[in-house]
Amino acid sequence: MNYSGINHLALATGDINTTVRFWRDLLCMRLVAALGKPGYRQYFFEVSADDLIAFFEWPDVEPIGEKDAGRVAKGPFAFDHVAIGVEDDNALWELKEKLEANDIWVSEVIDNGFIHSIFTFDPNGISLEFSCSVKNIDIRRAPIIADELPTEVSKEGPNAQPGKWKQAERATLAGERKIYPGELKKFVK
Image 1 (cartoon, rainbow, N blue to C red):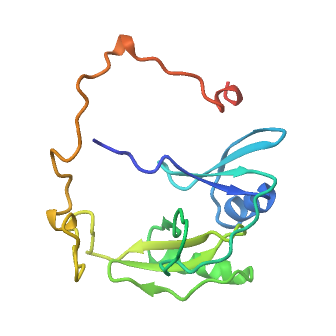
Image 2 (image 1 turned 90 degrees about the vertical axis):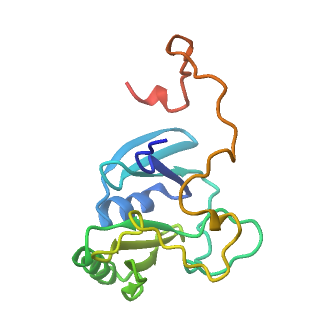
């Protein structure tokens, strides 16, 4: 399977205007789609040439309580934080300085061995990490498996293990493929 990246990560907000101000105006992520009707909105921001982040606006959504990235949580839980890559240390420092200039809390620059990171929160309480790769360390090319007590499954290595899941019995022929209209289709001409 050849994936092209995260097409979009869909989050929720109760206040799309504040969300647009933060993601478009402060972080400079282009608003590439603003779709909606009364009681429903979904806005998409361009993170990179291949990646988007989207927000549903639902009127009863409240900001979540701020939780530091990587800290243990209990009970039902969906995700820890959103990590967005920046080009290099200069871009990381520039973003840190911009957040601080706008009185938005941001962590110190953290050296995680293979990435340098800063952490903050968006107006919805979503924990954000911005990071850049450390020069000459690429965990995609040279995976690091350094768990002191690795699980049996992880000991099998970084690559997909054949035979662990069923394969499709037959490919759907081009003439048999049907694509159905989705909720957002009516907004795009």
